[in-house]
Length: 146
Image (cartoon, rainbow, N blue to C red; front, side, top):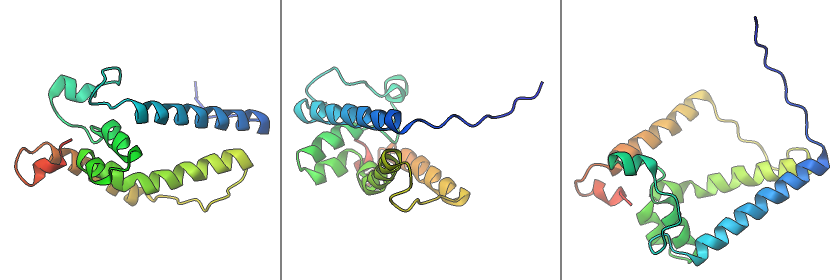
C-alpha cells in the first residue's frame, strides 16, 4: 500500500483571521502573565524536563527568565539568562511577523527568507555548540549557564 502525501485544504480567510487573532491573544496573555509573575518567585511555570532529569541545561533553559527580564527592560540580565535566545529574537520576531501577516493577508507581505540546507545545519550546530558550552563549568564558559 502506498502512502501519498496530500495537500491540506486551504483555510478560508475568516478562519485564517480567527486563528491569527486567537494566536495573538494567547501570546499577549502569556506575555502579560510573564510580565506580572517572575519565574524565579512563582512555581507554576513548567520546568525544563532535560534539566530535571539530567542536570544538563538545554538551549532553551533560561528563556522564561530572559523574557521576563526583557519585558522589564533589563537587557543585560536577559543576556545572562540565555544569550542565544536574546540574540535570536530579531530573527524570531521577523519570521513570526512574516507568518502572521501572510496568514492575515493571504499573501506574502514581507519578503520570505528561505534557509538552505547548509544554513539549517549551521543553525542546528550553533544550538548544539551552545548547549555543550553552557554546560562546561569552567570560566568563561559557565557564564552561558542560566
